[in-house]
Image (cartoon, rainbow, N blue to C red; front, side):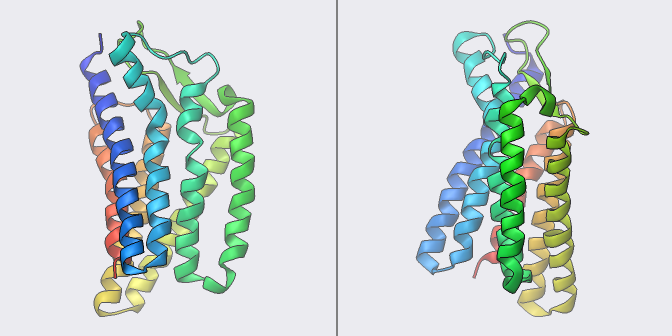
Length: 234
């Protein structure tokens, strides 16, 4: 039987996954309707980011259906979540590079595709070096907790991903906001805040164990895509 913290962990993770899928598809639909190509990439980024909670979501479903946690002897809970991080980062980097450094965007994107492939290989080959797992005190009492091993190669790559998002998108869009006026000023500011929210709340989620504050962390993470949507909306 799940403890209250287990319910909070499972329900909020389910909300992020569902939010990511529904609103990712919505953004892609809006892109097709308005011919705003860049919203397609935001929709994909939203989908991928929502799926970074897939491991928690599936473990939650396992407990609800079977009363015990899923088998994590292969580290599958962490893999199911973090396999989506690299595509989310690549699409977010593409958005930032397209708006800030369009002539050099493919150089930047290709670099992150290469780093992302390395990240994906590492978490598949040895997930227990990439993640710290903590099983619940008794099966089904809590969900399986996992966080990134900070000083592992995968952890360092994740830090590079998030730091680049903050510098390129967060600070880059903020500078653009200061240099602009009117509606453009607002749009760049919203893009900056969305990028910073994505990184800050994603980092908190990845490094710390869930507790009651996980509600606010996951709301903050999900809100990053609304901020970016309104920043890109024509």
